Length: 84
Image (cartoon, rainbow, N blue to C red; front, side):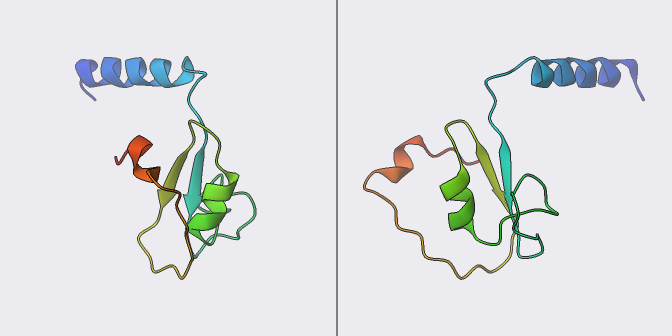
């Protein structure tokens, strides 16, 4: 590993550890057990479950699969949407 890469990774790790305002990551996958959504193994089975469980600042990672789910959004739901 190059020294520059090691320093960059250490700096990134420090930022992530020192940022208490960052929310949880919730996972959605057909392969998860649906229990709490905090990992791929315990992922929610439907995007609506993750949305219902999410708080301000949380992120939702949805595995590329087919989901049969009904989502009803309020008007202007997209204004605070961030796509990464």
